[in-house]
Length: 421
Ligand SMILES: Cc1cc2nc3c(=O)[nH]c(=O)nc-3n(C[C@H](O)[C@H](O)[C@H](O)COP(=O)(O)OP(=O)(O)OC[C@H]3O[C@@H](n4cnc5c(N)ncnc54)[C@H](O)[C@@H]3O)c2cc1C
Image (tube, rainbow, N blue to C red; front, side, top):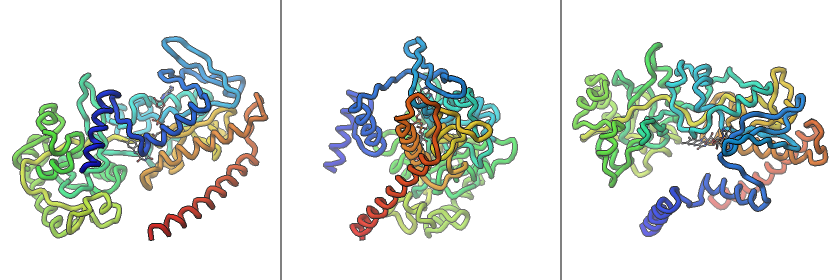
């Protein structure tokens, strides 16, 4: 308690003085270390300076035109340009072309940063690079709820955690479950797309009882001790004393919802979900509540008031991106590298070919290919201003480094295993 109390106080102080938490762990720590290394090496970083255009000399990309304080500035590079503008989660035109559930481009609410409007892909295409349009899934789908903002717009809250906790259930408008709620957010949405009839909107509702909302929160609505009145007032959270009244508020089939919940409750109390096998996999159980029995991922919805939040199709980021080779070089329509142009992160077409095998599949490749691109570029030090030409020997050199890294990793995991067993 002492530790948690101190952390909360420090977080509150950070919010007050800096507008955000400054505790350097997880992603914050990773990026902070990268920033420190860059500053130590006197790298000049320009913020609020969007790239508008790539500069070309014949085939070769040698820089970019950027906009700073209303002025266009040319930045010339000796080695190349790496596109890393975060894919196209907020590019309505490309969404309309590539997302089957969003024919107007507006039916999708991504939780990715608003500034990721597809510039990297457009810049790549402007010099002949190609965006893959034939992936199994064009994005990492996620159920998202619409959080009202002060300016009248909405932000997307991605429901990553609470779905798998005991006491939550997801239904479609017909009051029926359609998925194992504790599976990954991508699988959750794939099941919703599959269950949705042609012409219908792929929406669903996440529902829980009072005890569950107070313990875990529901989406943007926080758990105890935060009151729920504000979320209800803003139209984010639906609340009613009974399931039937809740269903009527949300336009869900009320009788079916009651039947669904009582069937779910029966199984949940015995620790079984005969319909979707929720809580059987280790993944489901790990996402649940460790101390909850008989199944960490299953709990009944018993006592009102009951709560619901509407889930709409969203994503954490996009998979479809610029085709590249193993050195992260952008490729043209014939599969040939475009000299001087690289793409990494979500600007690079997903190496998972549009599948979502597990968490980390965007950050992992993002870091890996950022590293590879940098190494390839750094390896050209003696090539000066010559056109970019990565020979196979470079790729082999990288493969050699990978081999060395792998063997280090094996040694390390041996040590870790020893420690933990
Ligand atoms: C809630 C949430 C949870 C997630 N959890 C995970 C996870 O657990 N594991 C995982 O692997 N992934 C996770 N992801 C996905 C992951 O965060 C992203 O896929 C990843 O950050 C994308 O990295 P990126 O470098 O491509 O883009 P970003 O990190 O988004 O960076 C792109 C940057 O480019 C800038 N930009 C855009 N246009 C221009 C322009 N014209 N000029 C200059 N700059 C521009 C943007 O402002 C932005 O700063 C999560 C995403 C969300 C939203």
